[in-house]
Length: 433
Image (cartoon, rainbow, N blue to C red):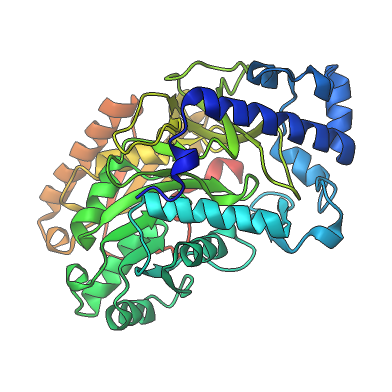
């Protein structure tokens, strides 16, 4: 279903005309109201009047996450605080959190974008959405909540945690759409089985999963275990929250970016050079319609790729590939770039292991080491020690073949790796201690 056909199916020329007009407006606004941007533009020797075509976006400076922290909490806002009706913040895992503000109009825009997102994923009026994203400063829970209500669906604001109770509510309330992180979707399936509930007997049709990188093989695992269509979404607090891009349930071939609100670019993370369509690199976004907290060329550090080929769903929006990792949390093991999602893709091809793993990186002498702890299935762990050792060697070889890096695989008992009710913790890097 297309929620806003007028904008989601625009011819490219018409869409780009809207983008240019909105870009010129937002550049004028931030130059006049945000001291950081006035200084950054002046240092780069560019004025708002220099933006005469979309290509002129490249003249503007990048905005980095550190810039947001340096202007903590509200100095990046482009509107007086009396007009700000909502404040969210990122998790702040390193340093101060990044703070984002919303005017009343921003909340309406966000609600519309999330209604578009849920509609593209297959949600419609009359659905019951079991919303297991966290509520609070994290944007996920409330973003989904407002979008589902805007679409006309019923919302169960269950948030994260208390998984056994969630299974009971899913069964009793008859929810048809599940919204949560992919790792928590698998956890819900696992706990349902423990409680004697066949997840496939529930009424769910769709799972709208995001907030962490996940592989195509993990999608298959979720769909097979839970009996649903699992659809990928993308967003980040700084840009608006969830609602930046979504897969359509018809194709599941890349995530449609809502380009009437955001201009995406792909750059070389080392040089900052803008890369052509089809070339992988770092995602950069410019917001076009946000009032309280507009951002110019924000470097997300998320690694992806952009495609312009038409989609069979009818949307004319550019699509982004699944996020494969981040340029700033990438592991470098003996000179090899490694992302957890790459290792996950190896593990998800096997039926004898569970979709729970932990990467432990250490340094012995001058040599980096990588240990991969993987849970095995219940019926496998009772096998002979020799069989388990053979499995470990097979997985080690598969990882070496794919990534070109050797590792030590250690198979562990079922349910011994800590479960996540939000973003899964996949890496322990002891080299930083």
